[in-house]
Length: 406
Image (cartoon, rainbow, N blue to C red; front, side, top):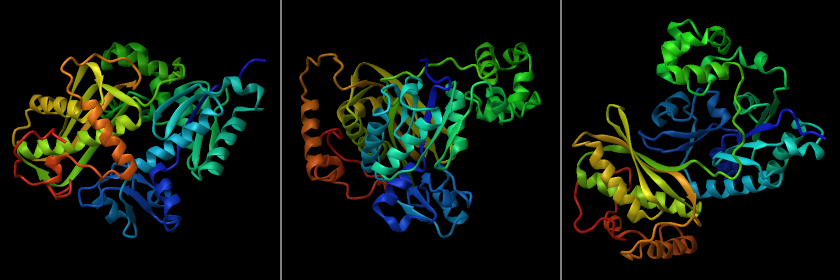
């Protein structure tokens, strides 16, 4: 018996951070809620559907969100709680199929073709997964199912909140072509502006254009890519066994950061958090990325790929500082700083031997054990412990000694 023709499912948790908070605080149910920074420069990380009805969206400045919805409840993020909930969600998904490609903590592609012997339809698979997550954890989710990844992801968005949508084989074009061209992967602001000049508003408009026109205006690679997607041609398989593509941390500051000493101290704080998240995910990064947003909202990124993967705050901080040098930020005021790890390897992958024998992995491993047992605040780095301000209230005073010292 052959498998399902609509073999690709995309599962996406609904307002994941908000719903995890509602499990812990039932008073948040049924009211407009966001998770994010509470200060004037905070940003919405996740918005409930009650808040979205007022126009509140993810990545919106918190001050704008409060003006948009005066009754808004704001909850500070708890990444540890979201990580624990994510692990439980993926355990349930893996009980259905091992063919999973995680995209983030709250979404993944699945290949469900082989479940044809256990379920009567792709919709039945999706319903069973959603029911298991709801019953065992108490969280809502939405699932899209189609013949290809592009359509499965679009379908999961259309299924929200708390629903299922299957795009049957043979109806791909009818489903895809009425959609706004922005729905296609690869259509950012610059590309959209060029497509607008060609009179393209929908995917159907794009599909009607000769490919040579697109390649001439957008370049051969992007032109061919968008032409294929407009035909629902997306041959990418579910890459099972791969974890999250990246892990990052960032901070938007109430007061702009100015001065090298302040930036280095905040980089230390961020790399300490990043190292903690990498270790708890049991991965290490082959590429370290730095993100800087200035007071005029100009944003730059810099990255560096290392010979062997890293997961200690010591190594991450050393690389991040070098990237800061490359960024040449000078004394420009900075409103957001972020550090990320990309190209993640499992913790068990062999690594380059450190002949210097610094012992940082053992030391930070011991620190992590203490934090897991007694809480994240049980151990702090000396240069950060001497600074009693919160991360959103930076000082321009420098610290003596090696800031990477724990």
